[in-house]
Image 1 (cartoon, rainbow, N blue to C red):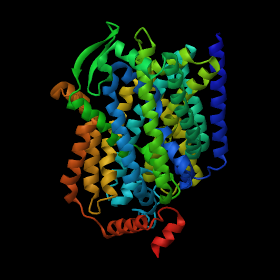
Image 2 (image 1 turned 30 degrees about the vertical axis):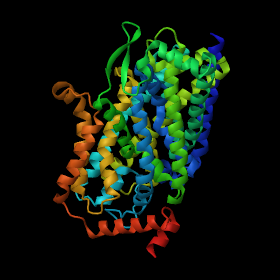
Image 3 (image 1 turned 60 degrees about the vertical axis):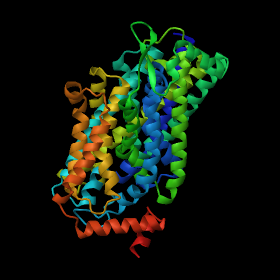
Image 4 (image 1 turned 180 degrees about the vertical axis):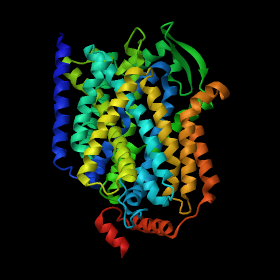
Length: 527
């Protein structure tokens, strides 16, 4: 066993013990279903912001994005541009209204403030859906897409353990799943959110330290630019024109990026309006007054982290003489090549943190869909709080096992799995959530139509495009377009009730007053 491996084992062990310790701390504070799902809606701005970042940027940030830049150069950065715009837009447009609306909307079954803990329950209450299809279909979409999303994290986790320890996928995934499930089951939303803060800090510092070490080794920015240009001038073009040929072992000229590739990259930003694991942080922040500060922290972190990840991709091009056989391993290979074994262990732990920080949030949301929107909604509405809490913990384990199966027996890259799930959530939920908080006359029929159109198109688009259209367009574009179209086309099939209109006006008044969120705001709004 090498010195590097010993240091890695030690640092990984300390990190994993710290995550479980946070889970144990949160366990004492998690006494109800509301605590387990949304942490009692008491996140401060820093925790909400960094938790949103950590739950979003997963292994894609440290593995997928640098790998994409390594293969095709600056043209792949359009995804990062789209994500930056979408993330800022979701904080500005959706976060304040979703925070207030999910708490204040009238319960469609019992009356009074619903305190909707999940997006599915919010949609049922927001539209007073008499069919309950909104809740059922939305929770089904959440569960299906999260199996693939969590699997993407486990694929990244397996690749990391293979790179560092030479472990086969099965034991690597078993170790990772065991730790994530343990602290998520113990502390629920609070454990996930506070571990996210640690994980976000580790990810950002790792993305900063590696470029500093590498650029120094390359002789500064001039050395970096010369190293990249020596491989291919097209790598620095924003419209592409170069790609790594694995068979030839070199970068070759290709066609410049067309509108399809650029639009597809920018369209990733639409996904932020429909990702349940990110939107849960908007729902869990303690007050609307905290959102501007949280948004500033979160967007600053996101933009700087993506810029650093793009830099890592270029650094790998310049640093390694022989093209990498696995581009998504560019970041861990740079760490091992540049850093002392102790530092390398800490930096590699940051990749594990990135994977875990997203997987835990997704497991929690999928568990909530099964418990809140399945068992409680359709089986036993009056289930005891303790019963719901333990059912939630059991379903975390069940979803983790299902995702592990996909990761072990599937054959897709991290980027492919993330892209599939991101489009599904973005198109299935984004349009209806955005319009639901701004359009007073929106009805349950249009919400259901938009959800079905967006989600179904996201699932089937790649198959249809390959067989019929052959455009190469990212599924988010047609799926979101059809979702918006279906919403407006089918809105007239149902009517807006008096309670729905009153809820909308009440929420708007509370947001305009600047007192959104919390008991005091509710009392003020009532007066």
